[in-house]
Image 1: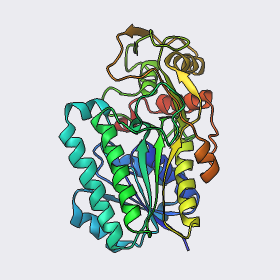
Image 2: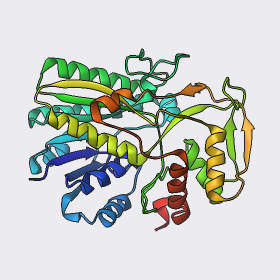
Image 3: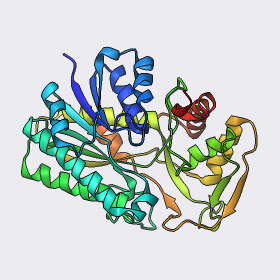
Image 4: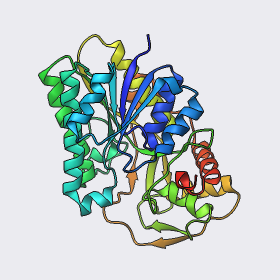
Length: 344
């Protein structure tokens, strides 16, 4: 019998690719998403690519609406939950922290209360590398001190603490928090990818929109960091590898016969500078991409790299894509859908 999974925020960038991976592995998936930062067309695209329409259900609702969310639990028996839903822009969280604390906390607490009521104790949480305290030693290991530097990161850090407290209070709970680094790439079909609202906050969608002619140039925020080329270094991981990591986390949870709580990094374990990414994308596109050097952004650190040995040991997770493949898949999506889902 198929296992049934609830995926909150399943129409988002990482959520949609994870749903696609789960459907391909013969899970039944129920997506709950308010579409505040995604499109209903994502659901149609997942059905088209997967050819598993009978195994996919969608509810458009806000997780803060407890009664509406409870109806979903009444209509389905879930074996596990993956929780992606939440606001996620660092800059916006600094400008409007109350919105972030209200949305990300209340939605998660509602979800956990209903899971407990309906005896669904298998839980994978979409956390972030932003929970770590900025330290000079790299890479980040799961035992590194936590100390998120902005309200978005603090919501992730505090929710991790809530989940840890919950697991200690009741050993029915099996919880994994996945701290991932910088997602990149798109589905091989070119029909599912990252579709940010407005001007992208992240490097690669910005480069892709410059390459396709939507934006005039890339802003490189600082070339005076203590790195080989002076630009920030980040750990980039293919979004399909992240999706695979979520499935491996679920499989690990299902294989255990007692309660657990684990925080696990997901990344590639390799660092790429801004110029590394820019030049890789230029190679894929076949032309130079204009850029301008500007001042550093407040809060940016020189390096952020993942120690992924725990993911390998516990989950059998090994990233499968290099930076060229990530850029190729991103460009295939951007070239095929220059305006994302809004054009269709």
